[in-house]
Image: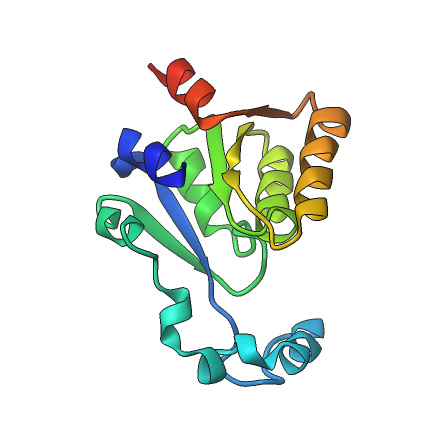
Length: 160
């Protein structure tokens, strides 16, 4: 489903990549203990391949752009927000992995920045089915004024 969204307009696609610490215990503040706890997620243990875009998405960059981040939120540091605002982007269609972590942080930051947020509900995932269901319920019930949810098919129909 993510591929279908990217194929629609690769030049307007932005990938964000979570770049973990190089070694266990590295990072700022609580991220140090996070990478001690989840040391298998460090670049040293998992290898640099974990940060690469997966095929066939890797074939879209460029023209798609990639922003790296060391935390869940792509908004930390402001570069992504400045770029989107300068380009007069007003709507974000969001897809991605870990609905209850990176996707949640992306959506909440986009709301704070005033973007129209459209969440592709069948183009997000979580390692926890319960978390996925709860995130969709949260966005549909609690944040319905700020977040629109729909299937990729519905989004592509709207995008025509």
